Length: 165
Figure 1 (tube, one colour):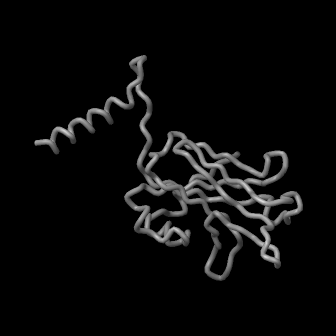
Figure 2: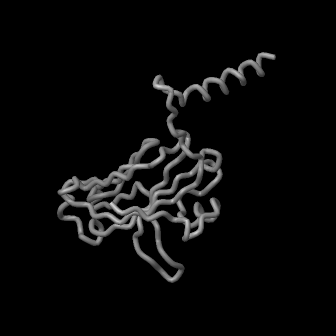
Figure 3: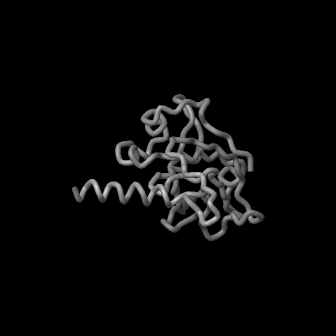
C-alpha cells in the first residue's frame, strides 16, 4: 500500500511540476536520441568557445556526448570524443577541446596557454557532433566510439540535424 501511495504522489508531483502560476504549461523535455552537427571556428572573437542551445530542453538525466571530426581514413570519418587534449613533447599542455552542458545547452571550448598560436587545422571550420543519449542507454554503450554509439542508438546519417551558427 505504501508503494502505491508513493507512486501516486510522485506521479502527481511530476504532473504539477510543469504548471506555472499563470495557468500556462511549459513544454516538457523530449526523451529522444538526437544528433546535432555544427561547424564552427574557435578564435579570440568568440573567446575560443561556441554555445549550442537545445530547443526544447533535454531531460537532465540524459547524457550529452560531444565528438570532433579529426580526419578520415579508409574506413570513413574519424571522430574524437571530447575532452581531447594535445601535449608538447615535454608533457606540458599545449591545447585541448572540452565541453560542458546543461539540459538547455552545450558549450564547446578550447583550453591552452596560447590558443591563437594553435594551428588553424584545429581551430577553423571544426565539425562537431553532439549526441543526446537517453539515460536508459547511457550505461550500456561504448561512448568512446562515435560509430558504436550511433550503431547502438540506430541513428542514420539522414537523422543528423545540422545547426547553423
